[in-house]
Image (cartoon, rainbow, N blue to C red):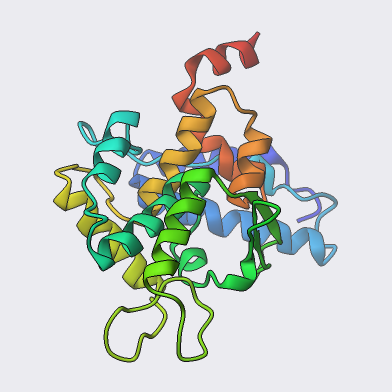
Length: 246
């Protein structure tokens, strides 16, 4: 194991790629990375070789976007009927996803304590394996949250921003946030390969990269611990890739 070299790992991946499908290769690569980190931490190898194992791409789904175009995002938001109580709540939820790129779980766990209205920021507490983040509160999102809370203030001792509007007024779960997002996309007539809350998160990241925002800033907004996670969005900005190549 002390003599293990990056070339050996690469040759193994290439050999397996001749017979294994991408999903199986992805599992193999993930297992090898974990094994390499284990060898390094326990002193069985002189260096961490996990970075030598390439990421395995998945076959693209043709004809279905991985993020919404600006006009599609506008179509989605315009389709919400904010004259209805559920519409006010759902519109605020979708803006949390579409403006801040929050995860479904982060939206579900938002409370009044996360909001600093005077400073105009949202302070997210650190979850498991994640770090605290302070995000700007866009004007349209702040207004949507205020409209929702005026119509349906938190009650029963709960400080959650998004609750069921009937029954026990329990806080919405992450699964409910995702289901709500899927239904809104379907009702707006927007087709996507993977509809749901995460599609809006990918949309935020892709639009920022297209506008030339550095990947590090996008990673900070999304709460990615590793910049490698954010690099998947680089493909949407070919001009940036050309500049990086030069």
